[in-house]
Image (cartoon, rainbow, N blue to C red; front, side, top):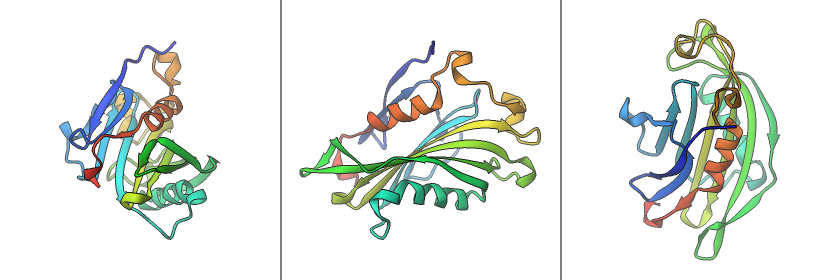
Amino acid sequence: MPQDITYQHPLFGGKISCTFPNRFQDVSDIREVPGHQEVFADPNRDESLIIEVLEFKPDIADNGSAVWFLQDLASEQDAEGTLVIEQSGVLEAPGLTYYNTPAVVTTAVGQMAISKGRQGREAQNIVKVYLANLRLKEVDTDVLVTAYEPIVINPLSESADTVGAGVAVPAAQVGCTPMDDVFKLAVTSFRVLDWSLF
């Protein structure tokens, strides 16, 4: 049974909130993070959760937007062997409504081989990536909620020093909430408290 304590985290100066386990530490306390992102990581498990606010992409259809962003992310990170494992249909989020227009949400789950930071391809880890695209059309914004879960850690990866090389230990086995549940909680609890952010 997971022992994680979850709480509502204020994001972007308190203008957005989202709930996830407190084992995820604010990366901006360690290194600089771009202003359009909030990045949290559990260094003991090499798992991370990123909330990103982007300009709305009107040329991307709602029903394929999460997959498009997942593939864009893979390309940006020079990933290899990217597979889309699953994708959702288009869902409305009535709890995320601006002037009577609910946000549109799609999700995708993929697997890819990516390197940490500036490490080369020889140090790639196999990672499961969960991505939700919350489309806030009335304020011309695409929000991405992305969660990374290592499947296999490469012995040459800098992650191997912290979490060990080989197949990652399942979260539940060490008393942590599994990443798919962390992701679902973060997406379903996502709230805009001050729309002036956009």
